[in-house]
Image 1 (tube, helix red, strand yellow):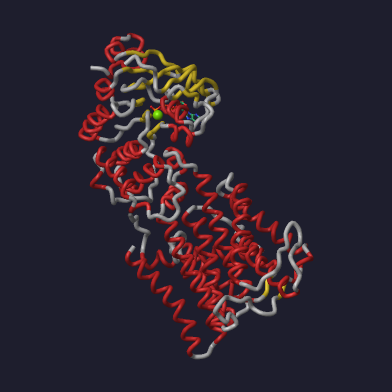
Image 2 (image 1 turned 120 degrees about the horizontal axis):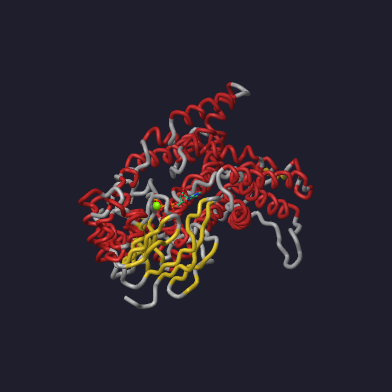
Length: 251
Length: 327
Ligand SMILES: Nc1ncnc2c1ncn2[C@@H]1O[C@H](COP(=O)(O)OP(=O)(O)OP(=O)(O)O)[C@@H](O)[C@H]1O
Ligand SMILES: [Mg+2]
């Protein structure tokens, strides 16, 4: 686990007026690991994900991906470079079917968005990739539903499925378990546990059980600053973390 | 979806049946009206690719309609007077051949759409509407003030241009030609909508952030859609000019853009046959209401308002219901 990092943030900063959303954040994501990013509401977790994915420009700092400086690339280029993200607030094409959303991801991955005449939903390779992703998150049976007919939890699952179709070399997941319920959370936890072998995951999550079960390392973000990074047992024992965030949340 | 397919077949069947009946009963004027509807339909189907599928509300598609029209007017007028368009760097002669005219109309309007799109697609929403309108009006005023091709008066062509193997002066033959082009365009647009490109275009309309997150650049997808859309509308412009054997700057005016949008809203935004139904109804109402009153557009406006308020999916949506997702 001490290989060179897949993803590395160097002194990332972002302000919204008086709000400092990320303040000199440095962290890395190593091959095969789940690195959980936790912190109270408004700590700047989603902002950080957006800065890594390229949807929000950083005020300062660098994002290195697979040894390459991607700070100057936009979100499209970073997705193509191999960063697969999910959104905290589900961001899907709501008029499409579940399967169409997954096929869209496969189209992005295959870079065939300028294929003009071949019927995309009859493309065996793309549809197979999309169906495999839906299967993996447990949405296979809902493939023909319109996305706006899905429950919130199912939309979270579809977010993850679309990210899977991209076959990224690092995942950025913003609260994939939110709204999943007990069973859904257990299933997703089991799935993410195996997913880390395919690509490391930077995981933002409020569900502490899931975090402590999954994470190889945990970073705690408070007011835009990383106050601690370490193995789950180290974080659990950290006094600063306990007072700042975990408090009565840990058993 | 099944119901919509059946309705589509019915609409196309009616658009074909009316002029055939008129032909059998020797009513050439009705054939001309049907041809007018078909040509408007082609222009509307072109615009609907951008507006319906892509969510790009262009109020400047008259520019492409006009460019197609003037491509015909300029080429045919030079052929009429046996003078080349220009002699340097190569000699370009005029022509009376429809296929050649169409080719140039499509190329010129696609190029214009590419340039207008490249600039206006940097904006969105109301700004996009305004900037496309501005481009359309720019062409309009340019044509009015450019004396070489008739200025405000426009250009007349004495004889309709030719198509190999057809007598284009025969109304039913020219109708058949226009109808065949409509069918070809509908086929092309159906294929485009079902392709990976169509999926990406629909995704860009529904959710730009999602589209970017899968590594697809909405701007480039929209630019291609806008270009194809402009090219189809330009082809319709060339046919429209041939139907009237006349072109004038009115083809470029924002009224024309507005009419195209009206066809789409009336029939159903984003529905394949929406503009066909819309254009057919528009031409029929223009003829019948126009005969009753000079202020027919007021009555038409009331009908349109009713559709907008009570039938959000246009008439096709009213008949077959909400567009179902399909694989
Ligand atoms: N676009 C924006 N404009 C202004 N302020 C913003 C913007 N986005 C986020 N913020 C502010 O930045 C801070 C960090 O927000 P962020 O959404 O990153 O927090 P978070 O850690 O993801 O919270 P949560 O756990 O609730 O998702 C908050 O104070 C928020 O109000
Ligand atoms: Mg958040």
